[in-house]
Length: 385
Image 1: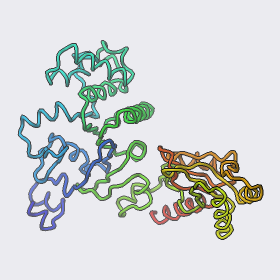
Image 2: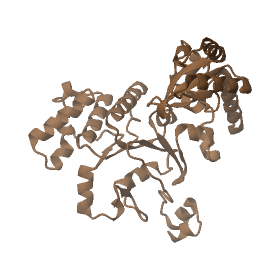
Image 3: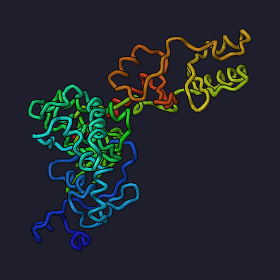
Image 4: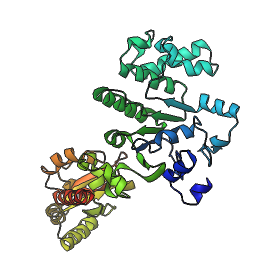
């Protein structure tokens, strides 16, 4: 530790002492209900870090706080109780007990925790149903495919209803199709249950597909933490940029990453619709634009109107903005992929509103905005090379 504090490198310490610095200065917070991905090249420290969280590796220094409790300082008895109740781990190697059935493997953690047989088997059947293996409950692990065995490993972890799940390269031993299948299963379960998950991966596609946030590690250090879009837009150094060399980053971007909040005039509807229309006409003329969006309570998008429609509304004496909403202007989800967004934008002469899961307006996308974003990304890729 003194050598680290003096500024010596991992390689220098190894050469002088024969000791390996597995993780250093790793300060981060995992939010409740998120999938937090640790990624990096082999030897970067990601598997060591995830094992520090449940003390499969003893920390030399520092704290590991879980719900305010310092895991690093716990007694052996308290640590065992924590692992039984609040922590679960899914390994790359499946780690199933070959002499136990699928049901018994799934219920194993509950058995260790002292849960009676009927209760633990009932809970095990519930989670086997969630992962699609109820019909295989009495089979032995050897009779299952690799993908099915990993489902059993996932079910065993879920059975104890942990507050934190640790997944170390959990899907990397599977073939590409089974790996994708397990990723989709994990995302579906996460959508339903909102667990806190720390997931180790060395695969960029996997990390960007399942991760809410990603921590990239190098030489035992965390060099950048952010959402996939944040890391793509602003890689912190050459090491992070190297991850994206030759990678088509466009396939990882979503509608929320290109939406512009200042692109389209917003009309915040009041009780005086005619005053709203008159003010919107003046603002559209001033901005040289032809379309505006009408916003309701809590930032929710209501509809799109045109300058021509607003003028006709004023001339006709209309007292309702809603009568002049444009037909065929459908908002898109913030999670819509860039490729899908391209297909929508070419058919749409009106700016496309982008909404979050609560139907709140995030911004708009036009053909110009999308083209500019693609030019910026191409320039970024050229700089990375």
